[in-house]
Image (cartoon, rainbow, N blue to C red; front, top):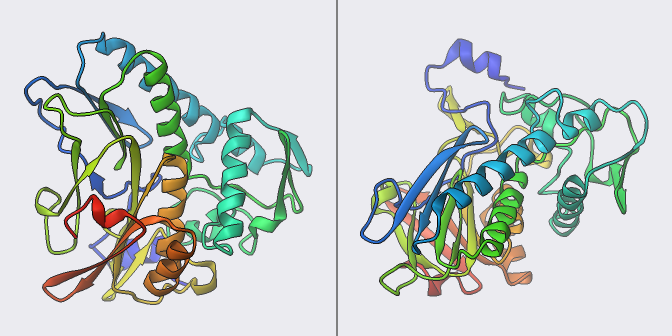
Length: 329
């Protein structure tokens, strides 16, 4: 089994970072547009960008984003020794009373894990750690079925079973921010958090918010262009969190049934969903399943998805559900 230490010794082409994965979708919000207020800040080892289309006090929105980011980081960061997730991972007993936020994410994680037959697995942290993409240690052969949740009581069958919410917590934070902004009266905005986006209302011109998705043979500024209105999108792929060693690419997206990471032409999977949390989790699960099995499951569940494969000088795209109505695929 290749390890991150091996890679650091033998390859200069290290692209991974020790943060929760930064995704690929990107909003063009780095510079202000006419009638659009743009703000940004740090979050989860990445950045957030907010584009506002109304003249409400922007500082309320900025404070809302900062508060939610700090809250979720305190609860679910695997890099903090004082986070609630770390305390559960270090638990020597079988059960713990957890916060409503942690319980919500655990419940969603187990639901997606069940529906994807373990392609999304919140106990996979120790295996991801072997490739250098996670600080989480524990039982390598843990399985999501080792976990159970009853109300706010989270239990694990083995004390060495650990949780990793890097594939879902960012989306949950985005949903919380979205809800808080709407409660504060914001009706037209585009919010990007580490590559995941949620859009409400319209651009000041009256059109839907425009976004772009990176593809292998295009820069993010000339990739796939689409529109987003009152929904969210998340993308999982190999662009930002992978490294090459001996002409072989290793990614943070690990299939427990293929821990040696067979080479694939799949570049990324994007999912549009009413919930950023589920968009986040499903983009991970479908990428792990691969093009054939991932697309089959997306069609079965009527998910709006975009699969991008590297195919020579041309990118191959496949969609499911209603995704193609919003993008020039």
